[in-house]
Each structure stands twice: as structure tokens, then as C-alpha cells.
Length: 324
Ligand SMILES: [Mn+2]
Image 1 (cartoon, rainbow, N blue to C red):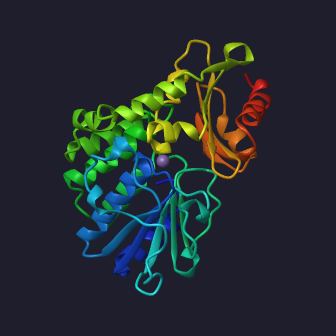
Image 2: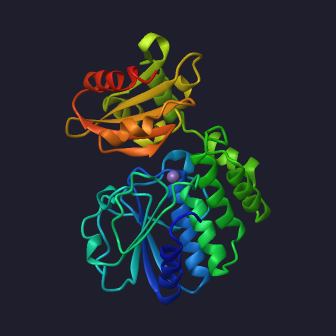
């Protein structure tokens, strides 16, 4: 654990002393945020603690068969007994409290767990470990420090957290530490072949149609070093999909020879565009995201801006032309 040891001790103490917790994470959950939330709940449960996992959104289609998902509660607002009936809320990989989509979390005690440098450091206990390949690593280290046995389902959730954030061990965070974590989780019962089937082979027909629509928008820029996919709102209606169903599509243009940065420009309600960027090697897309109040990692980052898809394309081109 490279986060401040004092904060980690306070985290362990808060867990030991508490009886009932709320667990939430960012809107549009991914494999890391949902796997970490469900694993944390199970770990707390094994210590005799109650907890409730809530999110404003459902998990995307490719995560629908993950273990423990029956404990995922999708609700638009906080439970009416918050904060009185809870010792604290765990807020998982949210750069700021607003990213949970909930209002009123500040009324209670906040435990902020993240592995993104862009985290603003809100809350009463703050663990931001930018060295961790995924938040799941922090959850696993917490279980070990608490002496809690990690069962097969928990290990599988944490393995899903790792393999999704590490891009099936193809991203720069596929370090010796990541493989050591994978080894530990597989030893505890996570089955990589089964997880691979869950994550990458159970797509809905609609999500494949969405992928086709998105790929049909491919445009190259900066002499073939930039690739763009456009994701207008109407694609969701046409394919009866959620934004999360496009998970992973951005990796396709990234694989084009000569492309150094792939960007997906997704129109969202209210005249805004959500920009997701993936880079190869040396190009730091996190720096770009940070300049626009977003965040992420060196090779995978994003931000939201006001404007049209054309505005977003122009802005990303201007930001990156110099570094390509
Ligand atoms: Mn993550």
C-alpha cells in the first residue's frame, strides 16, 4: 500500500468499529467499481457488518453475470435512513462526491477510496493509491489487513476489477504487481477462463449493433495518429442500449496501425459531450483530461465538456496535435 499508512490504519479502525455501512461508486459503473463494491460488501459481511451497495445505474450488459450482483441496488436517491443508521459511506473511485450522482452524502462520514490521481481528496478518510492498477487491489489489501478470508466469489469480483482495468493485461498497468494480484486471486478461486466468458463473450445482439454503428463513424486525424468515434444520443435509442454497452469499443480504433490516441466522443443530455481517450505508450491523455476537469490514467482518461461532437473533435485535436 503506497497510500499514507496512517490513513490505511484509520480505514481498518473505521471498519472494525462500525456496524453498518453504505457503499457507492461512480455513475455508469465499470468492472472495477462494481467488482470492488460487491467484494467490499462480502468482506464486511464476513466480519459480521451489514452494508448496502447502491448506485444510480445498473451495471453494463457484460457485467450482468458477475457473482454477487444480486446485492447491487439501483436507486435514484439515498436511503431514507442515511446518515442516521450508518457508520460511514464508502465512496469508490469517484474523483469528487458529485460523481456518485447522489446528493446529501456529506451528511454522514465519508470514506473515499480511489486509485486515480485526479481525486480531489474529499471525505473523512482518504485513500488514493495511484500505484494500484485497480481499486480492487486496495479492497484486497484491506481484506488481508483485516484478516478476512477472501472466498471464491469475492476473488472473482476482484479479478473482474483487475482484468477490466488492466485491459485484459494489455495496458501499461499490467505490471509485476498486477500479475501478483492476479495470481493471488486465481489461487483463491477466481477462474480466468470463466471470467473471460462472462466479460467478453456474453454480448447482447443490441450491443453488437451499437458497436457497428459506432465503428461506422470512424474518422482519422493528425495524419492518421488520432482516431475518433462519434456516439450521438440517438444510437442508444436505435439500439435500445445503455452507454455502458459501448464499453471496450474505444479499443478497436486504438488498434489501428499508426494511431496513437483513440477518442470516443459521446453526446450526453444537456448539450454536453463526454470524451474518452485511449493512448498508446508515451502520449499522456490524463494530462489533457485534467486540463478539462476530468481524470484517469496516462493511457486511459476522460472528461466532459459543453458543446457539440464537432466542438469535442476540434478540442481534442488541438490538445493532442502538439504531443503526437
Ligand atoms: Mn478503476
